[in-house]
Structure formats: structure tokens, C-alpha cells
Image (tube, rainbow, N blue to C red; front, side, top):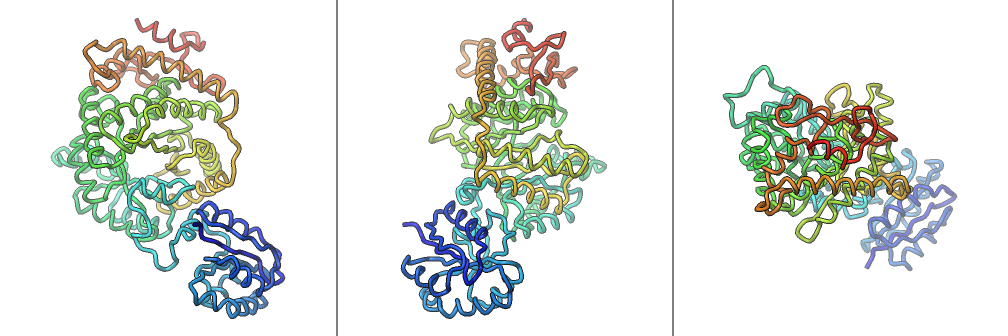
Length: 542
């Protein structure tokens, strides 16, 4: 049975907006709510709380603190019997009133109105103030998603050029309860050469993130997060010695999930020592390693194509191939990543249509043994330099992303175009994102219902089917599943079936494709700049 909350503004106070917001959040958290209205006498609140067998009584007062203090004293005396029987009491009001309510010592929790909605929901789900410990915050991704619903998990990248800066920053972020997942940014040498120190270059130390050089470094970074709201932690899967890194991550930072591409982080993009075919096989082994241990896996694949100006259809196809590989190699909880604003210049409508087309294709793969979790993020390359404009872009992008009903929002800080985020930047960015999320959760228009968006979804799904069939056609008949075969996937790139303009002069890809933003969508074009269908583009490869 649902627990019951009885709530009212007491005395002569008629301000009930805060009470109503509190009750709306309580309903989201599974409570039965009884709203008594404004200016309710103390005796009546207690009487109805008794009649309704309330588990929690919430009262509000937002007028003169001196009058309110006397009124709360009267309320505490009247409700003492209920209090002694285990009924819980919460108060909401102005900061001066909250301070006086806190001093009274009667109320379990007090609210002044600025608390994030997800933290209020956490209280309503049983998290008591002043008694917070790690056990109050689920420490696996799936459990934390389920615990935090209807709000998505908030994730942000963080890593500074020294260990000390990074440790202090993680402590500050965790204490602020700013996010749910710290994505640990480590420097390029650690990603590629952690287990090959002879290849490390001291001059590159700290380039791109934290210069972790030992198991103890990872343990220290994780220990820094053991405070506040005890955020989960994850990091890059690396570009070499993948399984050794995975074992270390699982042991030291209790990695929340693995993130790895299918076609990237190798010689093709200059971020690792493996050739294309070899790296695909290595990445598949990493998926299998994590899948066997029931650790979720994210394939951060499609945005790598979008960031290199590939047409929307190739981004959609790459997302489907990524999900196919994750399922084939034993991943049970798959995180589908959707990076919006890639390439920059797309309209919000066509951006959303591309994401919906991806959802349409990969949902066909879901089942009891392959659960799909949606993660969205703002485009890395889309931020303006102007700080005010960047903040606005972050809020607008997150609000758009909420149309996909994501389980995780990867907040990309508004400072991205200027500098790596400091702890204060991370906290601010997460506050901006949280407000956009709260606005959406209260009730947003259904942007997915736009007929133009749905028409583009249908077009992309049909176009993607043509590309996928072309990949099947280049496969030998004895290959059971061409979508997971490293040789076939490599040929799809070398033949130009999967291509992007920024891959020109690449040793593995053709880079012959040309694209433009037309009517808000990123499409392939011919030599005259006219849009061409996927069938026309693929026919020209022969």
C-alpha cells in the first residue's frame, strides 16, 4: 500500500505553490497525497492527519518569522502524540522560517525551496538528512537508475592535469551532490601506455586528463568520491592492453560501465596502436569481458561519425552496428549513446529525428537478455565561446534531449569550447542541466509527434536499411553474421560504405563523401552540392 502524506499551509499563510510542488514530487515517488489547502488551522491539520493515518505531515508558512515561530511551537505541541507514534514531519518556508523550524528540533526535514527536485525525491524515498552513507546511494548503474526515476542520472566528465587537483575536485563535486556519475578523464598516455611505461613520454604528462600511473592513483581518485551523494565512477576503456585495464578498473574504481567504440581509438583516428581490423576484434573481446561480469557496456560509436560530418544515415547505421555487436558479445545491459548537435548546424527537429531513427532500429534488438538504456549528451563541438551563450546552449540541448526520456544525461560542460572543466564548472553545468530536466519532468510538449520529424525518421530508417543490405552484400556466404565480423566491418570502411568527409587522406577510409546541412539535416551531396539518396551514393562506389 502507498504511504500517505497530508500537507497544508498553516495559520494565516495562503502561499501553497511550494506545498503543491512537494506533493507533485511525492506522487512521482509513489506516495498518496492529501492536500488541505491554504490557511489551515493547526488543530485541523493534526485531526485530518490522524484520520488519514498519515505517514508524513508537511506544513508550510511563508510570512513573518516571529509569528511563524509561535505557530510552529503550537503545531509541535498539538502534533506531539503523532510524533511519538512515529509519524514524520517536514516543513517548508522562507530561509528565515526554515532556520527557526530547524532550531525547534521537531521536523525531520526542512525545505527552503531551492533544493533540486531529485534530492527532494530522494528524501521522499527514505533518505534521511544527516544520516547519509554509501548504502543510501545504489552503487551499480541499473540500481541507481531505478532508484532515481523519474529523473535521469547525471554524468559529467572530469579530470585535471595533476592528481592533487583532480582528487580535490572530485571531493568538491561529490560533497555538492552535483551528479551521479563521475566520468574520470585520464591523460592520453594512461589510455594507451599504462601497461607499457617504456612508451610513455614525460612531456605528455597530464595532456587531456589526470596523469594516473598506478593502481594506487585510481584507488585514491575513487576514495575521493566516497562522500556527499557517493557518485559512481567510470573511465576510458583505453586504446591498448584492454583487458588488463578492465581488470584494474573493476578492482580500483568499481567501474560503473565500460565505454568503447567499434571502429575508433586506433590508427584510423590516431588514438591507438591497433589497425582497424585488429582493434575491432579487441573491442569485441572487451565487450565480452564486461558482459560476462554483468557490467554494463556503452558503445560510444555513432557520434564519432557525426563529429566527422558523416551524413545522418551513416550515424544511424553505425549505432545499429554497435548495438548488434554488444548483444552478440554477451552484453546484458547496453547503454545507447545519443550525442546531439553533431555535426553542429543541424536543426533541433532533424537532430531529434536522427536519434528517434536510431531508437527505432536498436529497440528491435532488445529483450530479456539485452536491456537497452538511453544516454544523451550535448555535442562536443557545438558550444559557442561566449559563456552566456554556452550556458543557454547547454540548457536548450538538455531540454531537447529529454524528448528521448533518457535514463542518463551526460552533461557536457558549457566551458568545453574554452577549457577543461574545473570542479566549480562541473557543479554549475550540472545545476543548469538539472533545471532543464526538472522543467521537462513536470510536463513537456511531445516534440517527437511533429509530422516533419516523423517523416524524417521514416526516411532514415529506409535509407539505413539500404546501407545495411550493402554491408551484407560484401560479405562471404560462409560468414554467419556480417554485422559482427571484423573483416566485413573493415571492408565497409575501406570500400566507402561507411565514410565521412573528415576521413580524407586516411589510411583506412576513403573520405570521398561530401555532406551539407540542408533543411536542418546532414545529407550526402553530389559534386554540385545537390542531395543524393543513399542508393545513389552507394551505386557511385562501384
